[in-house]
Image (tube, rainbow, N blue to C red; front, side, top):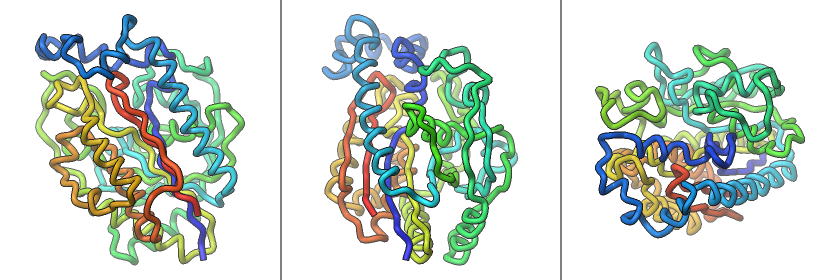
Length: 355
């Protein structure tokens, strides 16, 4: 029988930059002429948001936010190292990286071989790092080696197809050299202290952005840049079914596998009801409470319309993880934390489900 570790982390792009630049998403939104003055009025913001903004537009609170995120990542890395998996499967969103106009699958297994990646050349387009220095002061020629496991990836795709999960698969990138930022950032952050990442990785991208994946090119746009809506992503319950099928396949194998969901929670830049200035923290609190109570039905009942209304598109990665954990009979995580934030685009959560 296989052994399975479940982890939930964030790949929040501004964590890769400097503290002075960590609140760039809200600063950009505040310059949008279509955002009304009353929404920009700091005095009307929630108390925590005003506290985070402070007198220096979040530069001081960025240091505290970074410290809390790094602590969560360090906890997850310690669990990963203690488990020592044969392979790591990462669920992350593809934001107009390989999922583009020519093909947008609902999800895919990437059966890639070993890769040598230049993070600060490959990440510039897809994570908002263009023209920004990174926290580690690494140059564009800096390289990291990431192991793949194409044999297991091909096996996983076959197992899922046999179970009625119509998954796509790929052997090489279609558009985006290297790794899409949801996956590369996950590895960079789990190796925040640059000790190396020795585990083979299978990327499992999901079309989380659905109706906005092409129109918004998967990232921050101004309110006036509305485009026709794309067809939607699958509903949350389907992603839970996908996660369950993955877990069942690995449970019947002889492998030690870490399943990782990588995303922040509600994103301000996709939350129209707050003029794209604030994430839907209240909606995140409801789902986090259900997570710590092991109430999978709350997650399953979430409609796609509710997900999009709350800017929680990337949480579909976590729906997939929770589907996997439910299928294994695991209820509440063994450890979790929830880092609430308004001005840093999103709250972030971490979770550990031990094997």
